[in-house]
Length: 207
Image (tube, rainbow, N blue to C red; front, top):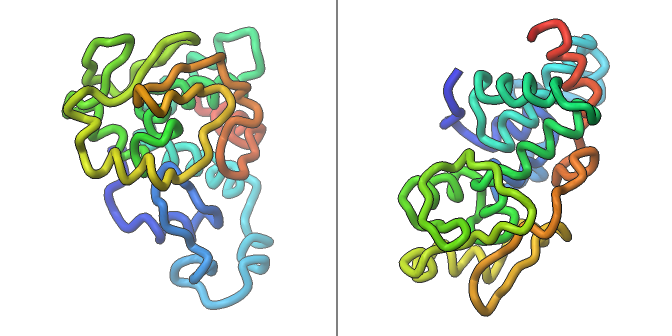
């Protein structure tokens, strides 16, 4: 399954949660699921355990903009770690360069951050990079290139970031760069409500 390129608000309404990585818009004006006309509670009460697991997994996939194949690869790697699988999954996702560019405020969404990286407007440790999936290490410095700093999107995003910069990212507004101060705790790093145990359970019998 490829990355989603359809209506983003429809995804938020289907999952019942705002996903800041996917869209700056909110589903607050139309909180009911698409195609349904009634109480969200009534819809949720009819969802099976599998349905709940799938919904939590989809939150991760859509927020971080991954294909199912990419997410499965990350889950497999997390399962091989000694730490809690759910926490490692989120840690690996949060350390992706495209996500960090978004979280630092250089881009309004993760798809926009991915585009910046793909087009060579982001540098890592002083070198231009074009791979959004690079996993940044603690202490590494990233941010827009000289040309990237002049982009209207970058400047507008810095003036009105979608989210507050998390404590594991140290932002230098003067140099327009950021440092991954330390590895984030994946158990509570997502900027949206998530039941990690259900994500782990979803993949437990599928990988």
